[in-house]
Amino acid sequence: MGDKKIRGGALVARALKDKGIDNVFTLSGGFCNPALEGFMECQINVINCPHEQIAGHLADGHTRISRKPSVCIVGPEGFANAVPSMMEAWGERSPVIFITGSSSLKRQGAGGFKEIDDVSIAAPLTKYSASITDGNRIREFVDKAYRIATNGYPGAVHLSVPVDIMFSSFADDVGLEERPFTHQKKPLAKAWPDPESLNEIFDLAINAQNPVFIGGHGVWWSSAEKKLEQAGFELNIPIFNIPYHQKLLGEEVDSYMGLADIHQYPPSKMALHESDLVLMIGARLDNQMNFGNPPLFPKSTKLVCINGSHEEIELNRAADINLLCDPGVFLDKLIELKIKLKYIK
Image (cartoon, rainbow, N blue to C red):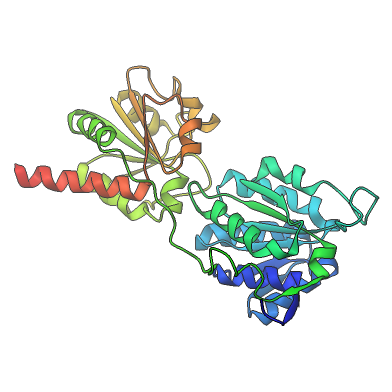
């Protein structure tokens, strides 16, 4: 282990630098100063905001547009202000990394400055919420949080860093003496389809008279919107978008028909009610999708959900068929099938 010592906050900054983080949004000062100094040393952009809620929403917006995680870091006095942005990021599957400075670990439960159970509050609004209780494990916690945020279905994560961990000194290479010896960003793990399940869906697609695509967040986070466009064009299948903020395609795309909202957009009602197969890719059967039920999806329509994570599969239990598969991989296979059929004919 090296002789050079750095503060825990600087160690957090270096761990995030290893992951390729470029932008941190914050309301500067207080408990987070060691981390902010570390970000500057690592030449990570620090965007100082007038309010913690603004910092959280800007981090979320930047993450959605860039499809690359950003960081929101706030002190214990601003944690509650960041909570609304956690909820927004959760709803849009935005992999924001929220870091909150917290009261001293040494005096936990004794009435520290703005002491609050931030880990429990953030837990239902994030994929992962934890407190770093040992400064020697900072890299481990950051690595775990980043992987959880970006793999499977993306989503916000939260790390609480107590003030005594933030300001204490640790070896600059601590955590690198055991596997993984390097904490550089790694390629995302992608779910690959079960061949039998894939063939079953292909048989349905080939024989369907009026199939429909519905694309969701998973298509965006897999950077697969162009593949969805190509699949719609090659297979002559209309494409609808889940009625959320994340718009996948523009009006210039011939096969894009708009939002799958039968109450506000009549063309989708006609298409869905006449469909015999709906391929819903990277989306959830939640309230916006009427939980998979009529009148949005007629009982006579076969409903197939393709999702890149087992968590979404569990949420989509109402589907007739579920396929665990990265949306981009599924669309590649569907386009390949169409090309093969053209060649055979």
